[in-house]
Length: 97
Image (cartoon, rainbow, N blue to C red; front, side, top):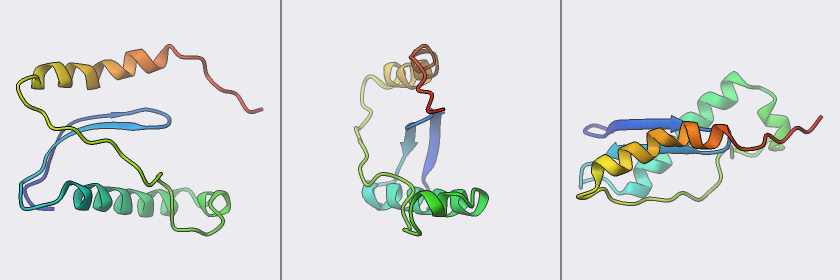
């Protein structure tokens, strides 16, 4: 979407942290919906086994998301998103097999 900008991105195994600039003419839900739709399509194209996992449903992402605005504490929020890589990497890993 023209004018939208990804400032920071941190991907974890089961979630993603993003800091974005979204112009007021777009609804946040519309932007998030476009991101989820585009990335789900790309993931299904790259990983054919996703169709088996989701029984041919068109979902990859969970329906929910959290959004907050960045105000005076922008540097603190940027640091938090970057810190998540180190924080989450120390957690116990779930092994299924």
